[in-house]
Length: 328
Ligand code: NAD
Image 1: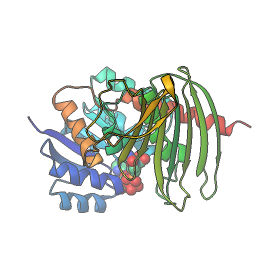
Image 2: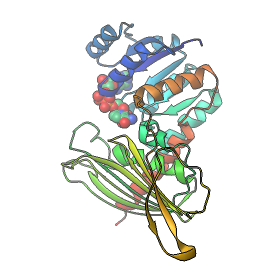
Image 3: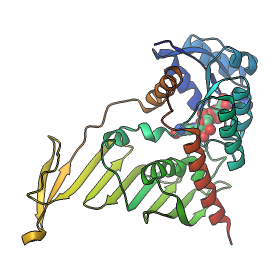
Image 4: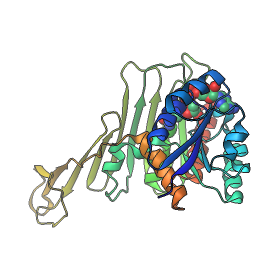
């Protein structure tokens, strides 16, 4: 497979990790890095053994695709210039500062015939990968994403910084439009919401209850999915999934080798076995996997795992939530 000529724009905290992984990837030829902070750019370029560019346009012209890892407020201008220059885009989350900007990016990419992958990295978390073969139809979802305080990311609300990861996962799994939003959020240490609780209802009848906080002492990233005869617990920090299923003792269900009957409930015709399964969670570096999936999508002309349209949908939902919080 031909390597993808990829440049990285913005090599701060996350961009420098992208650059390090791109430099080691067999699918990628790292064309170089660009950052407004020239010293930072030169340092990361030296570490990765690639070129540092003084002018972003020069990097765009030498790259078939770029990773945009600048602060969210700069996503729009950098992404539009990259698309205008004919580059495919890996764009960090949240896609842009507003829905209008995100829509313009998606339209521009379509018009230019370019691919977008949005950095919703939790899609590549081993816990999510472990349940890829499950027949998901959740009717109730409980999500908790709690982190310790870190000033990085506080330029936007916790909804756009943290909750948007769960919004993307939930929209991806539920596949139904949001019909109702109720939300509350409080700015405790920064100028925007640091903690929030949201209830979403979907046209399918599914209800999702999400809590996100960036002022928590104990980090937690968990999601619980409930559907008919099945309960799935995901732990994104521990990178594992636990599955509980109910089945009639006579029912011939395909089960994994690791499955075990942990109890039996009910009586007579209503008797059910409670099955516990621990699906194997692949040991992957999620950031490397998302980057290489993007490279593969460009090289083989495939649809990226997290499309621009999906990134836009997550942002639209986040903005609906923010409107609801602001409503007096
Ligand atoms: P950062 O502040 O550490 O780095 C941003 C870098 O971009 C800085 O080095 C800055 O000099 C540079 N920069 C700013 N404007 C620029 C421009 N116009 N052109 C070129 N360089 C520019 O920020 P970060 O924590 O690395 O976050 C970057 C992006 O990644 C944000 O959008 C953030 O939301 C996202 N992010 C995503 C995740 C995730 O889980 N997917 C995690 C952290 C950050």
